[in-house]
Length: 322
Image (cartoon, rainbow, N blue to C red; front, side):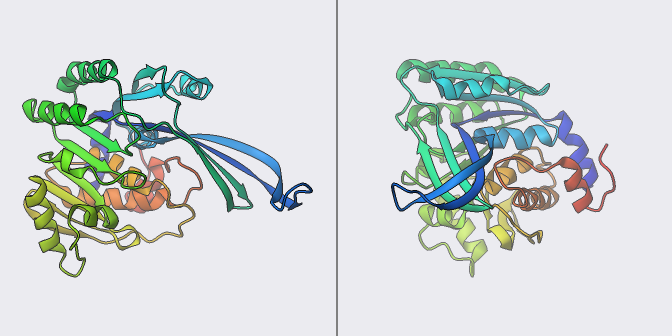
């Protein structure tokens, strides 16, 4: 069955919405302290550019073979030009340009794998009514032809309250499952805006933002409370190296972790979301197992980029990918 699910990835059509983030990793060697300040001086060896945020969710879906329409917003600046080179036969880019916005960029510097510094260029203001209307029209024109709608909301301003409300309404109207993952980092939880969606994906911190008494010692009860509170059909809580728990199609499911030697856990949740969005809703146990393995494999890579589909095939003991 697992191989059948993976083979079906190529037939799935996904509509992805949310903020894009450009991740720039600079690697080098510290040669001592700077002469003019008590800070490390580093000799740069190389720099790598990765598509993070929803760009990373998109990369996972494409690597696994899915067909993707990706709607996001960029600034009218030099950093936005990095996205011009992003070409894939199964990717339809629908990028809105906001002249008043900076393209979100997160730059990190590393000394032999040790993180020295991170500097973020962010502009978290919400879309103007004009851009919001354009985004909604794009959703309306693309939603009918997809199998599922995916939102990863890092809360950088693209997904306004009104846009969320209308996307939830459209997904219900067209009977398209809406998978949502919201990050709680620089802004408080806005999970209440996604009440009534098909499936919410949470980590433990986010679960407690929705339900402060969330308890892994009473997992099924905690999930039921979240579902009732948010009027959900399904809920998944990712537990990192401890696997995941879920209520899906009315069934309580515990998924064991896939053990790996993690190098960089950044983006594992995006890997999980991307893999599950391509899975079989009628076989959530296997789809959750695949999502857990794919997320674990993503932690073996330094930087926000997906593992290879062939590694998933091997991890499942299914032989070579085709």
